[in-house]
Every structure is written in C-alpha cells, then in structure tokens.
Image (tube, rainbow, N blue to C red; front, side, top):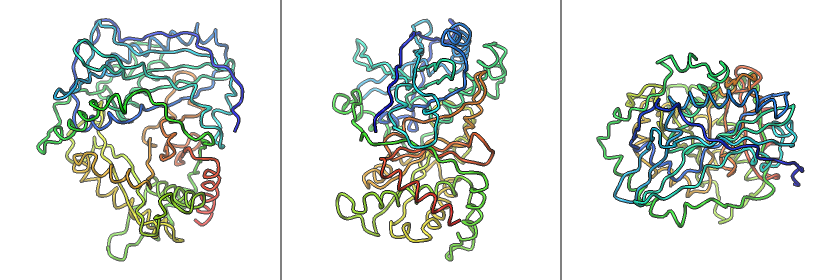
Length: 476
C-alpha cells in the first residue's frame, strides 16, 4: 500500500518547565507496580482537533496559551518533566526532579500537508501514516557516576493549515499509567481552555490534584525485592535489548477503528446475559459493556487469525491450545489499595483470562469468552492486590503462548472530553498498539453508551476481522 505524498516540517522546538521555584527538588521512589514497566515501549497517543486557521495564527494566538498552560500544569504533574534515574545493581531506580536544574518537557511544533480527513478516518489505512505526528522521547544519557538518565515525556503539536491540529504525546509508562496520564491531559486541556488562567478549577481544586506520596504502599510479601530483580536484569541488559528500537513491522499493516453503537451494545449485553448461565453456578454472570465488547473482539481476533493463517507456524495449534485475553485493572478503588483516585503513578493489576481454542471457536464461543472474562472481572474486585503482587510470572506465560490479545485504554478515561479550547477532539488514536496484538478501547465520540475499538493488523487479516465482526453482530 503506497503512502500518500506529504510534507511534515519542523517549525520550532522548545522546552517547557514548571514555573521557577514552584516545585522543590524531589525524589520519588519506584515500587513493584512501577518497576515491571521498564521493559515497556513508550505510551503514545494522538489527539486530533478541528482548527480552521493558518499556521501563523496558531503560533501567534494558540501556542503561547498552550505553552503557558502546560507550564502551570507541570507544577502539579512535575514527574512528567523529571528524569528516570537508572543506576546499576544493587542500587534502586527513582524519579528525580531538580528545581532550577533544567528539568522540562520538549515540545516540538510542526506543520503538515497531509490529508487531515484521511488521518482521522475509521476505515483501514496505512498504519505508518500516523507515525510522523508522534513525538520521540529524547535519548538517554549517562551521568558521571554511571547512572543512566531517561527522559519521561515529550509533546509534538502539528498544524494542518486551515484544517486542524494534532497534539501528540509520548511518555514512559514507569512514571504513570493510563489513568494518571489522562488525568494530566484533562488538567492541561482545562487550564488551556481557560486561557492559561492560574485560577483554573483543576489547579485549585484539592480533590483533583495528583497525589505523589508513595508511603501508602505496604509490602509485606517482599514484592519490591522481586520487582527490583527484574529491573536489575533489565538495566544490566541495556546494550543488548534497550537501545533505540528499530523493529521492522510488516509493510502491509493497516489501522482501523470500529464503532459499536449504543443499541448494538445493549442488544449484545442482553443476549449474552441470557446465555451466560453456567450450569455449575447458581449465580448468573453480570455482563457489562466492557465485558460484552471484550468478548466479541476477542472472538473476532481469534477467528481472523484462523481465517488468515489456519495452521500455526509450529503446527500444534489444536483445539486444546490456550488463548489469552489481557486487560488492566485500575486498583486505586480496589480492596487492599488504600490510595486516592488521584494517585499519580502506576496502580494496575493484570486481568488475565484464558480458554481453550476449541471452546472459543464453536458457534457460541462468545458465550465462553464472556463467562471467562466476567469471572475474572469479579475476581479482581477483591483479588486485584494479589494479582498485582504476582509480578510478571503469569504475563510471561501468556506472552510465551503466542496467542494473546490485550486491551489498552478505557472508556472511563472520557478522552473525548479533552477540550483545549478548540472543541472536542475529532479523533483519538493510541499508537503503541501498532504491534498488532492489542486493541484500544475508548468511548464513542458521537453517542453515549457507544464504544470505539481501534486495532492494527495485516491487510488480509483486517479484512477477515471486519467480516467476522459483522457476522457476530448480525447474529445478535
């Protein structure tokens, strides 16, 4: 698939800091919920907005407010302007912010001649078409005492003259999970919409301010020690595994977004609720919007793989082969986590569901999927702490299988409410799902109760997925 011809020109690169003297020099320790994310690629998101003005108008009128509001917001979310300090073993990594030490967020301003409407489309298009709008984190450096220093966040703002603007964000997952980072974006957009007024409600409402205190974490089972072993192996292997990623992805991959209407989801939930009656249990499964969407997407991913490649590469993908589904559980409000909802950092537990291929590929396989996911969701209500403390062992089992689907994002983030003063976003994309094994879930832009699901697959497999999804929706 030939990419359309267009130009992306860098206009300026600036560095935005919190107001001078507003944040003291601070060191934040990392815990067992942060450390496993060292091996993760940066989280990358794109927010597209309508902006029917010239580039010069943006630079003169919008950019100063965008920079000023970012500076004010970083006063509360200072870890994003800080550095990840990664010493060799047996020392521990930490986040370090230096007042007056030049800690800042790089903000690149660019201009593009690309077709804005193509970029925000839902239909399949070349997955690489969005890559020019994703910021790159600055390279790591090495301090004089042998500590590797990693930047945490970068921003790229691209103007499509007289059409739109894209705000691209990249951040290191070690510093913040999706809930924390979207809290930052929501605050920044609110301050920007108020023309950068320090009196913005988000900056003055104590109930909305991020909490950085790590003292609330109890570690009776030595989880931090186990997580540190993982980190020490990671940092010791830097030269082999952690240099700049040059992974070559298949050229025929396409990105598409599927919008499930509220009426479709209601019907799917009703049908699954009726059918999900496990004869071994007296209690009927509760099928939520999330569970229903996960179930149909998991089944369609498996079937699309079967349609495109019916025989696995090792020749042993039979009915007893286990397939896995992974979703992240925000533990801030779960039993055992005495943390406020505004805690800034990582507070996720892995919800891992597995089922045999033979049970998922039958005509009512979606019911098996829904029952398994619903059961895990219920278990995580009280067992999230235990799952989080198990570290990476179950994840390693899942990844070794070669048959897994993961979910990124959440409709609870309400990302389409992020208004920088230009109205609601026209489209939002998560670029870190480009590996093809993940789905992104966000709420529908156009109607309450709907869902948007984005994914990246090879062209042939995307065709198979589209067909399978249409058949499954029709069946319900």
